[in-house]
Amino acid sequence: MASYSVVSPSADSSSQKTSAPETVASCFATTHWSVVLAAGGNSPESAVALEQLCRTYWYPLYAYLRRTGRTAHDAQDLTQAFFAELFRKDYFRAADRQRGKFRSFLLTALRHFVVHEWEKSCAVKRGGGIAPLSWDEQTAEEWYLAEPRTDGAPERAYDRSWALRVFEQSLARLRQEFVNHGKAVQFELLKKYLTQEPSTGAYAADAPSLALSPNAVAVTVHRLRQRYAVLVRKAVAETVADPGQIEEELRYLISLI
Image (cartoon, rainbow, N blue to C red; front, side):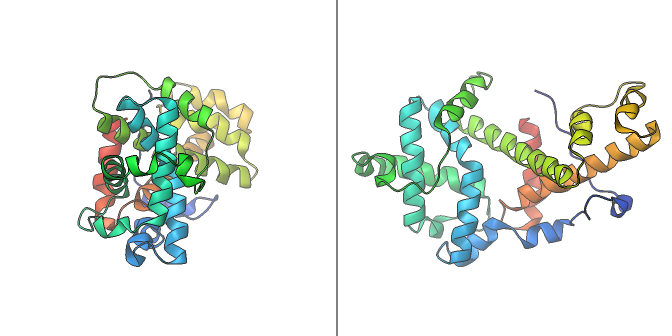
């Protein structure tokens, strides 16, 4: 697995021509988890925010359940039933507003559900016919089987899957921005530099395909990394309740990769 290097946006990043980079404050202004917590999960806005977060981060829960020894079918049933209950019940009063991390809340809520409520729900498959979330179950298992096998605790597997999802989500957002600007080819050629340093002459080798000079390629890669850093921080900000937690959470997630 390649290591991810998330750099901080520098002072000259405002010259970027794709889209103006958000500050950490503006990222936090639209934090989904803070909306959910503020409304206790009961308002239409918080329901939408919660659904978006769950659609993004369901897979780490699936991976956690598989690591606890459950079969693929049981993990699918249990994950879906859990989300059905999560949308129906007021789990948010148990959320720790001091820690305020959606990652921690979701795993704690799942454990509670498994211990106290799964037996009551197991007679009604797939969340009682309610499917608040949907996913390709075959893909989920393919992802799980492709993960490196370790002897780590299920909680470690959960956190690592979460970290990978953050970076994958951010990469997908970055790719879409380039596609929207008609630069899909440029992105595909340069995305490798998000996870590796260029070898000698690499920029010169890429320059003809991009119709750029080697120096212009270097500048473009610099801006690509800056934008990726902003998007990663934005993804992390969506899952914490306090902007002061962003850097701590980011460092932890990077350490898992």
